[in-house]
Amino acid sequence: MRPVPAIEAILATPALWRGRQTAGDGRRVISSGWPTLDALLPGGGWPLGSLIEIGIAAPGSGECALFFPLWRDSDIKHATSAGAAAGRALARRSGSSANSTHRANPANPATTAIALIDPPFLPYAPGWQHAGIELSRLWWISANSERQRLWAAEQSLRSGVCNAVLLWPQNIDANALRRLQLAAESAATLGLCFRPEGELAHASHAPIRLRLQPCSDYWNIELVKCRGRTGGAKCTIARVPLHNRMPAHATYDRRTGI
Image (cartoon, rainbow, N blue to C red; front, side, top):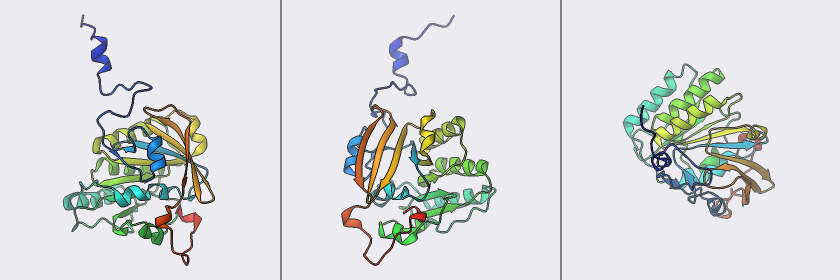
C-alpha cells in the first residue's frame, strides 16, 4: 500500500487553492490601470495567466474600455517576430474566415496582439486609438460556429503571442471554461470572457468573476468571485479617465463596445 502523504505536503501542492488564500501564488500581477479596482483585487491587479469572466447586461456596453489602460501601459513584451507569424498561421488554421482587420507588426517584437474572437459589434477604431492602443495589435478572428470560436480562443491563449484574448461565447459549459483557464495559465495570458450577467449564478472554473454595470459615466463593479477575497466586494470607477477623455467633437457609438 502506498503511504498516505502528510497533510503539509498536500497543502503545499500548487494546484490546491484554499478559499481565503491570497493571490500570492507566484503569478505576476499587473495593474488594471484603475487604482480603485486595484484596491479591490488581491495582489493589486489582474493575475497573469487567468481567465476573467465578466457578466454584462448586453454586449457593446463599453466592456472593452475597462481594459484599455492595461493594454496601453502593459509591460508584457514577450512576443517575437516568429511568434507573430505563428499567430497569423493560427488564424488561418482555425478553419474559419479568420479575418484580421489589424495584425501585429512582425517588425516590432515589442508589440503583442489583442485577439478579439468574433466580437458582436464592429469595434470603434478611433476610440481604441485615442486610448493609446496601436491598431496594428488588434486581431479580429471570425469563426463559423461556437466550437470554432472556443477552439480559436484556446489556441490564441496558448500561442504566447497574445497579451489578451477576448470572447463573447453564446453557449459555453464548465469543461470549456476549464480548458480556457488552463490555456491562459500555460502562456501567462489574460482571457476575457464576456457573458450575460445571469450566467454568474452558475459555477465556473474562472478564478475571477465580476459583474460590470454601466451607469452614465461610471461603471459599477461587483467582484462575484476572486481567489483571496470573499465575493460581494464592490467599487465604482469613471468609465473614461479624465486625462484621457475623447475630444468634444468625437462621438461614442455604444454599439461598438467603446
